[in-house]
Length: 430
Image (tube, rainbow, N blue to C red; front, side, top):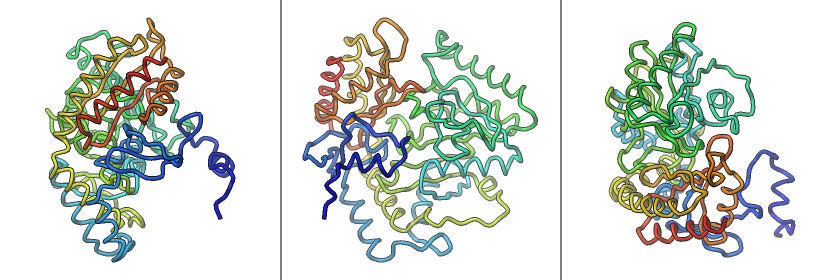
């Protein structure tokens, strides 16, 4: 029998209070197809958030569902203690695409676990628990990743197994460097990095950075900043970890990985990924050059990382993305969508800034005529967009005043126009 108690009440009774839900009246999504999803009441929505940038190609993509079904019909689980053909096949493809020489790949079940593994590798390799992280950053919800998150809204404890130093430069249009041009901004951020290193005791293990900050509101530095950082890091033997959980797989349109906008001094030492590669299946992972990946001197396995079913999904999803040039689609359709949103933003006083690239855009809302964040306005637009048939995300530092726009990479021109029109109406409603 169906439980007659409303699902929201059951959620609040049995799940943690801190488990956030969108909307005053939360919705249950029951199924999806392409770029659309439906709720339990039969309402249809254009999905511009993709389960937090996770439904990367499309809902119910036949190639992925077929691969999952066929693999599940053979064997669902074995662990990494046995040879696993789908895991090896996906690892080969990811290693080749990563840009990291002599790459090794380790699969996890989430981006949090991927970043946690990267920290383990870096601190072990460097024999140091000191980490550089960017202000306004977010890297996951485990104990170690919370401790390097430079965003108080997502950092519930100050206790930490690591000593973290926070560096300027990830937010281009706010903070003490915002008034500088790009070259001066980068030079000042590099100077800040040098100053921070002067305060650290001994050898720092690594810098971890998102090329475009996700939870932070899709903020980013000028292109080349992390490449300039890399020059300093290399002098000190410090590793560079590029957190590509939200920027990987061509979402930015211009590049396959976010780090490639900062590539003048070579690729990162460690790259982490998750979200979109599984198109909804639980996949995360770490890529590192062999000497870093192999630095662990104790036994390690993964019970669920590299599951045959999730790996089969990843292989099929990555093949679809490459064969259909979804990176190119993100560049073309994303560019059109950004232009459309830019025109809208210019006429809405509450919009402080539109930022992003490809199919990864953020609209920051402030109280008109000021730089004061307006999370209430962001929440109101989120509600109004849902009523109009569009699902968006939120983010933006500790004040969640940024609308996050990240549809599946197969978005069509007509769907981009439809979403922009609904969003324009929602913005004007406030």
